Amino acid sequence: MLDIRRLHMLKTVAARGSITAAAQSLALSAGAVSQQLAALRHDVGVDLLRPDGRTVALTEAGRVLLAHADRIFAAMEEAECAVATVKGKVGATATLAALPSTVATIVAPALTALGADHPQLAVTCLVTDQAQLRELTLGTVDVVLGQRYHHLPETTPKGIAVSPLLDDPLRVVTAGDESADGCHERPVGLGELATHHLVVPPATTDCGQAILHACHQAGFTPTTRYITADIAAQLALARAGLATALIPQTAIDPTTPGIRTTPIEDHPIQRLLFAATRHTETTNPTTAAVIAALRTAARQDRTTHLPAALKTEPRTADEQGQETRPPGAASGHARSERGRHSGPCS
Image (cartoon, rainbow, N blue to C red; front, top):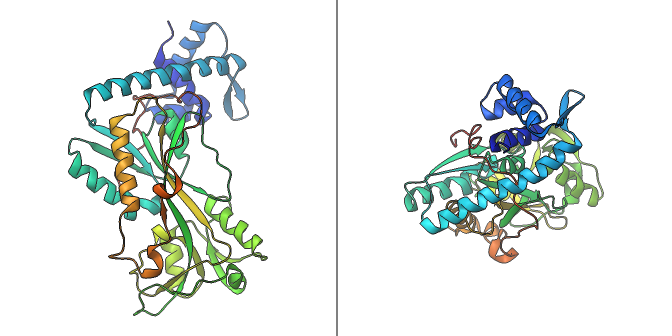
């Protein structure tokens, strides 16, 4: 009988591209992983991995075996969810991967609410914008708070269930009066920024691509004086009058002195914030509780701290439709790897 742990190691090596990277994620030595994979190769009697430059890749036999292994992982997770549903209780642990730009406005309120409603639940939070959905398929995390910019095609991996949370527009941020409330009521045309020096994320990022795409649609190539994905740095440069920034609304504290934020009138740039988890036919009470808290935080009435022009723009999941579930079995799940790279929210 094949060892499920060895199958999971094979899946991890295939996803991470090398035995060394897989070993690091599994908190094992490279020698230990190699030994287990050699035992798996002996069990099936055929090579499962092949060299591919500086990485390794699955052989045809490896791809066939992993396809069957994914169905095994999915069945195991389905069984765990079914038992959890019978118990009817939220579990003791969960791991959340969240975008840095969502920590203050969504993640922190959601975790606070979860602590009050489910004190037995300890949520470990991995704050990252890198390969979130891959970590979900590998079982490293249980829930992802991710993003998709509207100009990009939907590329949800097989076996992942996505719940829309919030339609989050980018706003133009410039230097403003220190005594101002941070909001300028008149929307601006994106073309008006053709003469501005911009601070933008790298073009390799989704946000950077979205900004370039919108500027080209508006008929100009932006003058990028500063390139950084650090939103705090973007705000600092805008506040100093050195550049104009384009920043997601949820990442801006409207009470910040010395900045002015305005909506884009003609070529809006928007990202969809979503919660994702591995798809199962039976709802997992723990992941459902985490997603419910994220959804509540995303839709919370922000009238007490947002200027009037900001109050009506974000759209929540109620306005966009509920969870979408792509066809196909759920991807692999392995509790042995869960949370290995996670750290506390900061």
